[in-house]
Image 1: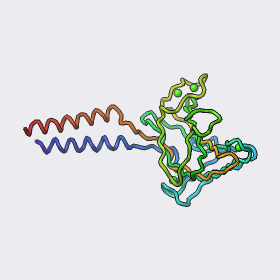
Image 2: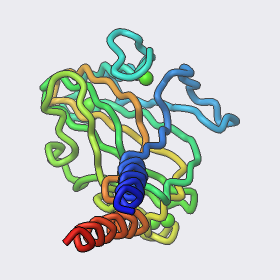
Image 3: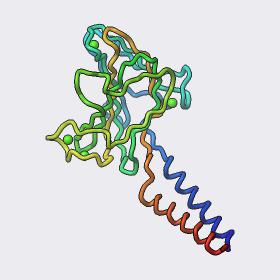
Image 4: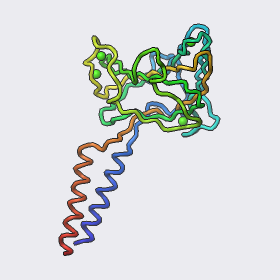
Length: 223
Ligand SMILES: [Ca+2]
Ligand SMILES: [Ca+2]
Ligand SMILES: [Ca+2]
Ligand SMILES: [Ca+2]
């Protein structure tokens, strides 16, 4: 009888652990990049500030996941920090996830990354304050690859007249906008861009509770 309870608990624990780590990927760059093909269901675009260098390219040199990642070389030649951006369109249902998750290769330049998420109802969400102080976007203050997780709740609706102004996970596209040090350059990378769940869902918590109740029952019977 005790053994049965322990087996039940082990199964419940495994299910809970799996739910907490579940990931869905927008793009891992393993199928190459389709630049500006508006007829496709999965494509990228890019744009640069006047006179600046903004070069996102597919690279395979030291990819952190699989064989490829998106390499980003950018230089701000007109001293306004902004260099350009790259966006990705791929409609996905992210309602089961609570956070954006991606791998970012930094160069300790203290440039910063602006991230925008767009939903199918037209809502455009921004991460961080949208002011001239670029340091309060996501500062890339590390060297090498690092996992970045940002809760969707930290994104703020940026177009009050469009959509229902609420994040429901009805995902359509993402924008990655690069701010370099004034007159300086950044050498970054992006890979394994997707969504994850950091906070276990209520159903998972309920399963955990059932497991703990099972354990309590075992200890009670032993006494
Ligand atoms: Ca990859
Ligand atoms: Ca610029
Ligand atoms: Ca809106
Ligand atoms: Ca919405």
